[in-house]
Length: 141
Ligand code: DAT
Ligand code: MG
Image 1 (tube, helix red, strand yellow):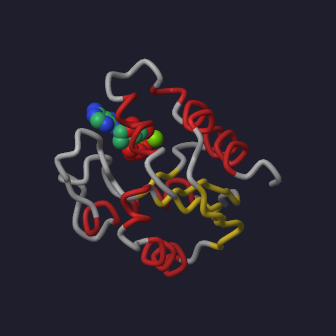
Image 2 (cartoon, rainbow, N blue to C red):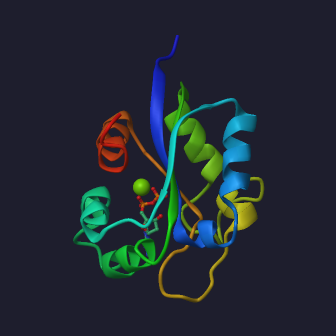
């Protein structure tokens, strides 16, 4: 017995720019998760400060926010039993160089030598994060 969950997925600016939104959506749907909401937007600084609040003191924070604000992203809410952990499995490890083949980051991401970690997708890491993040990207949900 598991509980129905929602997760916030982002196709980050590198993935959006490379035309990978459809491939990410395809993998989510092929896995069997349901698409609940979807929008395309260039995130504001305020949204990113809130979204990445846990990383505010990290040395990579300025590069992270600069990268995430650099262009449009596809924001998606997905739904399914254990979809939070399930999407993290689909996404793979944070570092795209180390992410295993078969994962989104392993198959589609790489180090571009840009100083920021460009790893194609974001996925919520817990039910609490998912609720908080969905509130930032989809205030009407
Ligand atoms: P994840 O996106 O796998 O949940 P995270 O929440 O720890 O990883 O970090 C958020 C983003 O910040 C991550 O996708 C890429 C960037 N990042 C994380 N650790 C980093 C590091 N050590 N150096 C540079 N960027 C990093
Ligand atoms: Mg994270």
